[in-house]
Image (tube, rainbow, N blue to C red; front, side):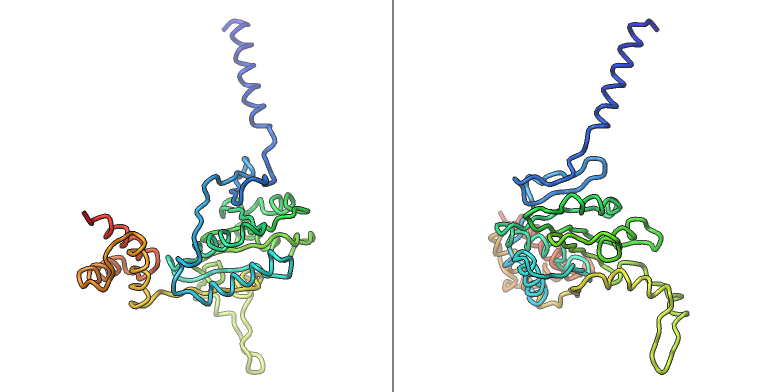
Amino acid sequence: MTQEELLIRAEALLERFEGLLKPVESAPDGDHIAFRWRRGRGMQPVVHPHLIRMESLLCMERQKREIDRNTAQFVAGRSANNVLLWGSRGTGKSSLIKAILHKHADLGLRLIEVDKSDLIDLPDIVDSLYGRTEKFILFCDDLSFEADDASYKSLKAVLDGSVAAPPENVLIYATSNRRHLLPEQMRDNLDARVVDGEIHHGEAVEEKISLSERFGLWLSFYPFDQQQYLQIVDHWLAQLGAESSADEATREAALRWALQRGSRSGRVALQFARDWAGRAP
């Protein structure tokens, strides 16, 4: 290899290293309402956020009322809680958070989606939001941890347990199929003991409860019954201009669709409505 070829290769390597050393954008810009945090790439704006109207979320009036009240307090500068939305799959937990952003974005609410694999960066994300005028929800979707997971410890510290005070303009809204975010084993209960007639959990159970307890507001989501499922089916069929479940053939097809999937959820109802409306000539 000639000296000239070596110099060309060296210059190419230097260019690659310079690209790696460029500082990532750690703070959100003022032109977008939703962002994603990516390790090594920083804060990335979501150009086309998935915005859902609150009116499109059915059969969850209590959950809508509670999270809307909490978010309104937060946006108004009053005290509010971190929120854990837990329960059955497909029941609208993530959709509710997107709907909350849609409703309150004009009042300064912003959302930053943080994947579970990136939660270890939470302290850096939070540091970049101090002093901002906007209100930020850190959105952690479908959380589930193992006890020795490093990202679990980062979330626990940011929620309540770090030497640094959390900024008043940041809340964490998380969804999970597990109430305590960690797997619960039968053996965990073997260390429980009764003292003066009261049950005292063992260390393993206390550790698992300690994370979910850091969320001040819990919202539970349960599977829909048949009537609720058909109500949601009708809503989406109407949106797509198709026959409602008042039509016997449509009703039977909707129920068969749910039976095949083993779930009567809002997600399954929307999937059926898309399929049924798409079949129409």
